[in-house]
Length: 113
Ligand SMILES: [Zn+2]
Image 1 (cartoon, helix red, strand yellow):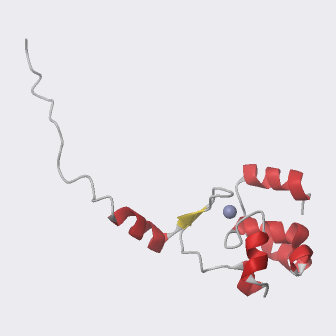
Image 2 (cartoon, protein in one colour):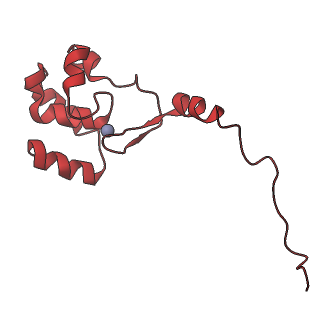
């Protein structure tokens, strides 16, 4: 039996300690659990509760994520339920794309923008 000289087992330092991964991820960005959109920034860049002056409680009632584009998209569809100026949310949502799949689901649930 011959052992091929090209085979090497690479067991170097390729794995970072697992504890460092969540920290790094938090700092650099997050992936929305609702629409799947990956953000390259933290969760404070856009917050409906700040941008539209609604309470955190109201923001938490939302179907989608109030710190993600999908929350803005939702606000543009039925934001008045939460005291949000729907037309200004809808305008902002025009610059806040979400994955097509999420967009389609939202259109079915709340109607299109
Ligand atoms: Zn989202």
